[in-house]
Length: 507
Image (cartoon, rainbow, N blue to C red; front, side, top):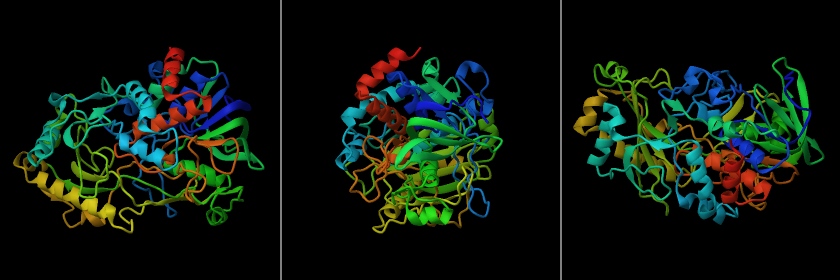
């Protein structure tokens, strides 16, 4: 067993990814109660410890050494990378950082979730932006491929823009805002845990997957942790907070008997609370994808550069289906080693539906943390055809860019040209929504506006799984805001006050 685990704490936070790290760091700074953060993967300590693996630090590529390696029932690995490490997916992502749009948060509040209006959460979004040390690439830092992509976007009518991380920014194309510091991916652990690791009331323990939440009737009283030796250890807690992400947060709840009776029965789990929304409402930014072999010598040319990450630029556009927000399409290029998806050609162009309506589901297959998950995104399946229409317009935008001579010369011959992108929808790797936030009369709602799970006491969820609708930008910053916002609410302070008090507690 992990000898570092206490037997009892005031709050146990399950999952040290972006949401969990922000929640735990903020709660420890705001309250005197003991906070235990348990993470299924390793905790390599503070950034300055020198113990972090080089591949997890380098922002040049997307490492897969700490991937969960999600599989289906047949054991086939799914192309749905998720990081099993302190910092979560912020420790292996492409580093694009965005606050998303004001309309997204106002929409959450209008859907019956008070306290999530943009004017209330923007101070915390700004703090997250600062803590992750977000900056914008300069044009001169872009590789030749990325410059050609930006120029092609401008040629077909997208305004040039360098404000893609602003909550009021509209359509445009330009260099990405990124959480990169001197070539290091500045992950959620560095941003939200390191400044408060010195606090006596915060304990962080890695390599401790949680099997289930423990209940006394319908009151959460702790968790059961599985050690590397297979032994189980009980940790009692006055409050349990799940922050394992959109795939694993509903899985923890389902393994704990919280969910739809049919799902639990099929996995051999006794039901504690009937909550049919657990694992439903799986959202993502569905993408169309065009692959290219690249011009002769492209990889060698990029390899000679001192700085040559695969992703550096981003475009945003409005489709004919767009809501009142500023945009609903992303276009971006991956050009180089394509490290996140080994086996693909050197260049992939993506067009994303950023307000996708299709809803998938996540369901457990067994009772252990490493049991296979049934993950079905059901991309482009919404009955009204909204997502397919937006993806079609994103595809047309990409195609118009590919014939611009400067970009065409970089792309080379198209690969996988026999594949219809609209029938092979790809993931943007932004899963959300499976523990939906909403009022008790919403049949799919899992938590209320404070993160409290409906129908039980002492149990909360604080990560991207609570999104009622997906934000229209990359979701790393919003998820960190959600975690910190939930902690502030439980501490009884406003987001603005919480930020001030965290800064005072941080070293």
